Image (tube, rainbow, N blue to C red):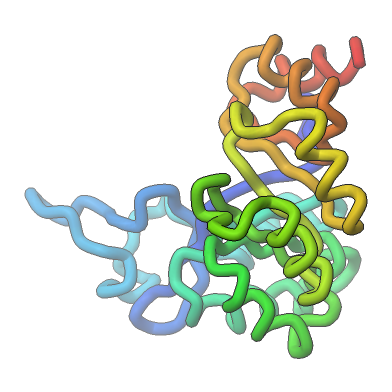
Length: 202
């Protein structure tokens, strides 16, 4: 964020004792074995695996936070932590999951949280226009696709239904610029400097 990013992204998992923790793989090395985070209590995890509370305590709440929900049971804990953090945390939280119908079921209880269909074009079996209409009707805020799947026509289609468009995996400046030219609303990249440079040229 010091480099200019306006948001953060992580994967969120539920520990055996009910803590929401942030980690990419969902497994930690214990001795010679990898153990799933879901089988461990928070106190047994390595120090480099933070809880969501740790993130808010360190970074505050003045940023967009996108979380890939790896275990649907963690969603309630995530939302409770965000609401307890106060400030802008709930309204700047984006929960991503590949099952848009699951997200639809969350909509009423999570009225103050953004929901994101994180999917692939091939999973839209009835086509993107049908999916855009379904997401709009369900009150789902955005759709997230790998950056190479986006086209200008596709972003326009989802925007026509009031659905925001996110592109992930854009690691090179040319890929980021390409997304921006297509009218994307949010970019996920590991390289903040490249994102900032690309946005400066947009």
